Length: 191
Image (cartoon, rainbow, N blue to C red; front, top):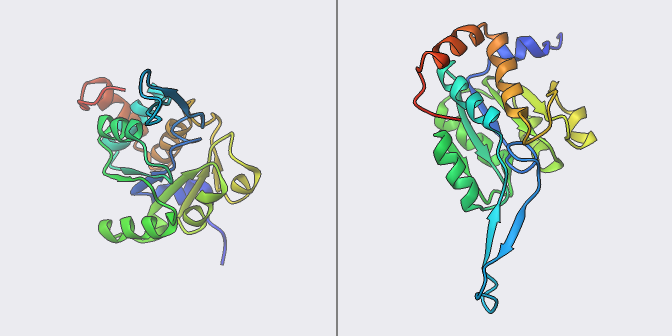
């Protein structure tokens, strides 16, 4: 049995799932103490998100892909960004990413070969090794890159998710039309 090329794998994708820290962000987590709240140790979390990835999610939607995130951490910052991006699936506080991945496949009624997963660290390996098209960001750990069918040119938080979306939509010959529709205002979502 011959191995499928990355382009052949990308052509089958209907669902794109991804990690957050190190993929949708650069992996840095900023925690700021709230003044006057020292006894309760209240903090405000901040993360940076790329506008290119936001536009990419809009392009994915226009191109017919469903999207979602699976992350180990719980973060209101991530919840806010997910709402802004109108992601179909938001799974936070997940220690077993493969179980969440399989649950989402069941909800979609698709096989693993129709799903892609974008990751950067070893916790992402189980869904990456069980999906149809595994993608590592440029700044991923070496073990993750070795398990990937495709490595993005850009790092996490710097447009890596957009790279993955662009690759998939180009493989499916939907990129040009998605861009035309996006520019014409087909998406109500900003970036």
